[in-house]
Length: 233
Ligand SMILES: NC(=O)C1=CN([C@@H]2O[C@H](COP(=O)(O)OP(=O)(O)OC[C@H]3O[C@@H](n4cnc5c(N)ncnc54)[C@H](O)[C@@H]3O)[C@@H](O)[C@H]2O)C=CC1
Ligand SMILES: O=C(O)C1=N[C@H](C(=O)O)C[C@H](O)C1
Image 1 (cartoon, rainbow, N blue to C red):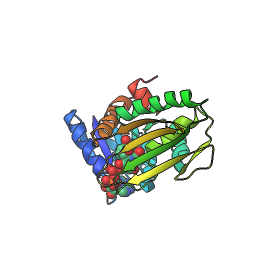
Image 2 (image 1 turned 90 degrees about the vertical axis):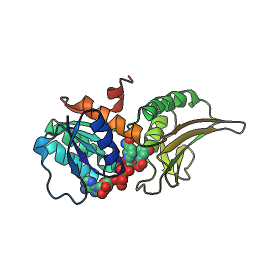
Image 3 (image 1 turned 30 degrees about the vertical axis):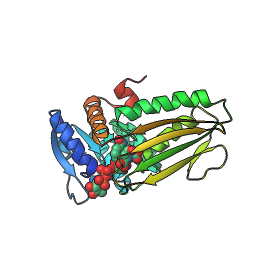
């Protein structure tokens, strides 16, 4: 498979390694200083760039009929416009705030736990995310997906960074050098705490998930999720 990388930073380089080990060819490495892109020679594009660049990269690929795997976070104000462009151009698209298998299992566990906690009003929930100090967006995309999973299954109506009013979920974002990504969902009562945690030890899981999604999407049309790719029902 011929893969174009949009964003050749920490994730782009990790994806290159994993894709080549799986027998794929990297046909383009597009970064901030790229002047011209040849869309004619790519089977699929994988975008791990920057919040300000993601929407433009994704929609350009759609215009050229190239399916897109999107891992960049922090650009979701334009997400619905991207979905509409995908449908209009008959292209194919997967966005995931986190491509690792472990986190996608964690998302399922989060929703299951939220359903159980729904009627237990003595517990208050919060989410903590910890990432390396170069991270541009806050809170993390993964923390937002976790909050959305709780909101869909409880009476919580929204989320806020740091302090949140009653009925909304506080998300605490910490930045610590060299931390690939740790997410904790905490339910606190006066007498105890229930917590679920996912800790990434490195970036390999994110990169492998993105390459598996790229292998899966080629030849398909439409908007899909990692639930489709991993058959999580
Ligand atoms: N969904 C997931 O599983 C994961 C998502 N991410 C997200 O991926 C994104 C990238 O993360 P990292 O690789 O760690 O960041 P990074 O800062 O190491 O790399 C980003 C690269 O994008 C480049 N870039 C800037 N403008 C561009 C443009 N117009 N077109 C193409 N490239 C451009 C930068 O020059 C840089 O090389 C972030 O939004 C991060 O939150 C990171 C890890 C996992
Ligand atoms: O920027 C990162 O590094 C990561 N970003 C994603 C996010 O915002 O959730 C996924 C992962 O946690 C690493």
